[in-house]
Image 1 (cartoon, rainbow, N blue to C red):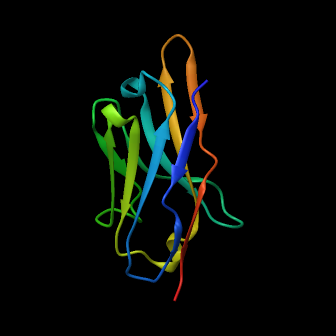
Image 2 (image 1 turned 180 degrees about the horizontal axis):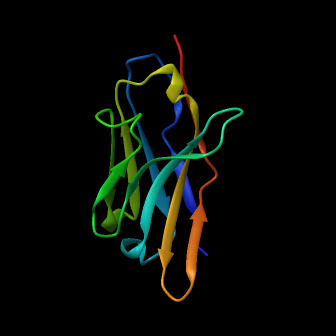
Length: 118
């Protein structure tokens, strides 16, 4: 069982920045594909950004050029740097860890609230 603990959410004005962090309780963090998802009220959870164990990344079209996902395997942490925030970025942001071998291992954090408002 892997525990994921997110931090860094909060209230920010439009155009501002936040950095989310997610620390994993596993010694084999480097083998996991990591992702940040978000869920706004009344909407389905959606993928915001993902980073594979190899370091390759992908982003939702709505955040390309504004958000950056990166990882520090030594610290067992994945980050989401969010710039030029918009009110529509308001949501609960969740960290996800995924690894597939003969068995699939998939874990979620508890979420952190991001509110973009003036």
